[in-house]
Picture (cartoon, rainbow, N blue to C red):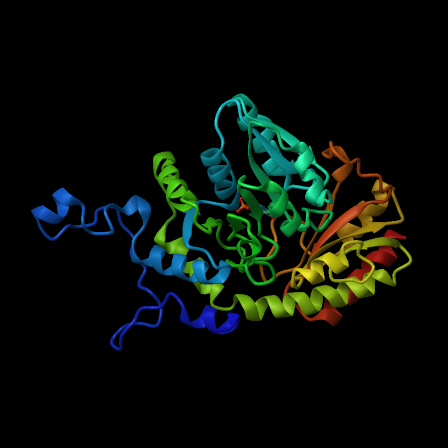
Length: 379
Ligand SMILES: *Cc1c(COP(=O)(O)O)cnc(C)c1O
């Protein structure tokens, strides 16, 4: 079954006299039919903390999306990232994390993990198979994120998986969304998504998911989620599942519009770099294409100006691009960012101002005109 068909058909109630969508089953208590089933815990659903039918249906759709054997839901993407790193590390351990990782992931490593006695080494996201030289006897996992947050470096996941040997490779796959990238097919053991972004798709929920290709890791992550008391409401799961129904179709539009706007920005004299893996000029374009990926509405530019007043004029002039965190919804966003402030392994040396765009589902001519007038005001 192809992606859009899966989106529409997997995770639905079976039979004739039922609604198309799984019912929204919220609640704490789940009844057992009799004493024996209670004593022996023979039924799959025990208690509302782990969700019920609504959750299981959504998890079935996510497993099909990523080719996973297990899914654990968390209250947001960051919850999913910290959950599986916590499960796979222990005091005295060490992890590898790309220098281009999502900033809150770094914050978790530098804060929580350090306090727990787990050391993090940040590595050049372009390191590929040379990551082997950074593996220590106490290394417990290799974390990846491709493309890198804000700066869009593409990682060679198959080379990293090969160098990792028995070490689990975890990939933050929020960008690929299981549509344009399936890390589990390439040998990673864990794929994580902020469901908040493209699966949710409407900027109305926060949720995260840990998807695993089992080596026993799925059950361990599920158990830890229970111990930590991570729980997701059935209402949010129903919204996320509604988003997933149109995921492939929406992404096709985000991809087309994103590329069109990136190509337009390449022609602007104020723009010195367009950081978009789908453009031939992107330094890892061939690697991206090799692993069979598409793109979406997310990319960055670097401007020739460094003046903060020009940045302010540009941002404030935009009318269709909102200024705010997150992405993956139906609406366009433009946020300035300063990667030089956080990098430790490879300094970010671009002098100009970086802006990250999320291209939503609006008409591309309207978006282009909005940028055009904002560039005029920034001049
Ligand atoms: C947004 C994001 C997250 C975190 O998701 P939340 O649901 O906001 O916690 C993690 N990774 C990446 C790459 C993201 O863009």
